[in-house]
Length: 369
Ligand SMILES: C[S@@+](CC[C@H](N)C(=O)[O-])C[C@H]1O[C@@H](n2cnc3c(N)ncnc32)[C@H](O)[C@@H]1O
Ligand code: SF4
Image 1 (cartoon, rainbow, N blue to C red):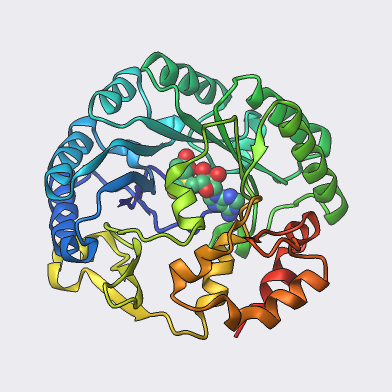
Image 2: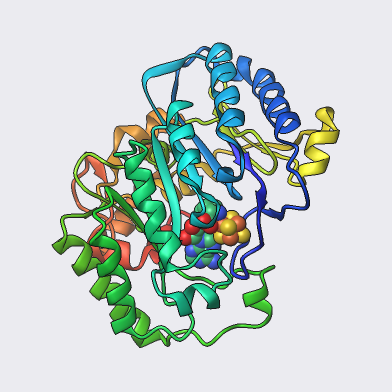
């Protein structure tokens, strides 16, 4: 569920997010989301919803009442599994005590907070609307509101950041004992302000030092790296994201959302929604902006792009189950990957080695058509 507005656009961000101007059309947007969902009911083929993710943008700009209304109606359209995981992304600059408790009461059971850094100078450099104190307060508020399941986003390789500063940032974040941490390297994305006017980032060697340090510190604190950027205490992995990485099906509704669905006859379709919020709202017939069927040639790389991000990889039989292709068809690729030490030799699994994870692009290149 994509909610495409933010208080202010961060200079490094290329997500589909638009600066809020005036009141948000909450009610109209929730109605559009529900209409969008109704159009997808057939494609869902009666499968129960295992997880819901309100991503953005900044979903915490929406009131708990709006989120609650959506969840209640959506559950009627497409029943949620009893243990459904419902995550909402929140920016620490947009939260108050009442909001978090309201989301919890509305059925949200996991929060993902964009902390980014706990150093005020870095938060300023990143153009964030919150400081260190608000970030710390948000974590406390989440706990008070009854969220035992939450994720904190932290970025590293920030403008002017030394390895020692990155380590202090990470250690301080881990002292808060979040069940889940997403630890991202800041990247300069085209179409962002940082790309046009790049800030001074740490050099290659410093970034390598930060990465080695971070993985060691996270492990030392009991976090397992189950995906490139995702680290969790035992049992707190994000089920929603695991489904993406295991090449499962998902609906995607809201401005700019992506969906991947397997049709009953085995075709795999990717679709995207109209990116611009106003156009998404104004033109119900134009909500879906593209639908594309994945060809047999591109399926191996599409599958591997996801599966090989996972430390444990996936069971080999999942390749056939999820793509409809025989494993034999990629046998020569698998052999090359194993010979080069990038893929574990176990034929029952498709799992990257340590080397494969470090040189993931080289590993993935083997599966390019
Ligand atoms: C949609 S945002 C999370 C919620 C909310 N919008 C916020 O920023 O607090 C998703 C996360 O992606 C990460 N991110 C965004 N742009 C990035 C970039 N250029 N490089 C690395 N991580 C980035 C940030 O950690 C951010 O919290
Ligand atoms: S990082 Fe988050 S708050 Fe900043 S513009 Fe992107 S989506 Fe919005």
